Length: 127
Figure 1 (cartoon, rainbow, N blue to C red):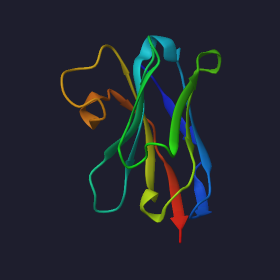
Figure 2 (tube, rainbow, N blue to C red):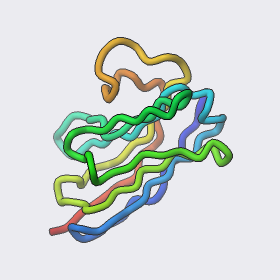
Figure 3 (spheres, helix red, strand yellow):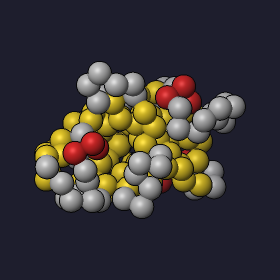
Figure 4 (cartoon, one colour):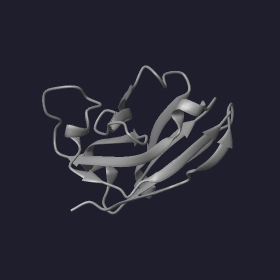
């Protein structure tokens, strides 16, 4: 079983930056798929970014391309999300997700790809 613990959330003004971290209890290299999702009040959980660990391919939602960067440090079993040029619409609870097996058919940023979830970290962007 994989345990995931997020950190790094907070409150920033529009245009600011935050870096989220997700510490995993097992080697991220064997996890196949890890990603960041977010959920705003009254909205469905949506995929933000994902990384396929065997070849380090990355995937981004259109709304964050060019502003967010997903990365991982295998030595530290940690996944990161660098968020720049933050906008008020980025306000949400951000969740780390992992899938220690090949992804299934369907959208790579679908919440259905995740087997394990962290508890979430809140990001609030004020205008």
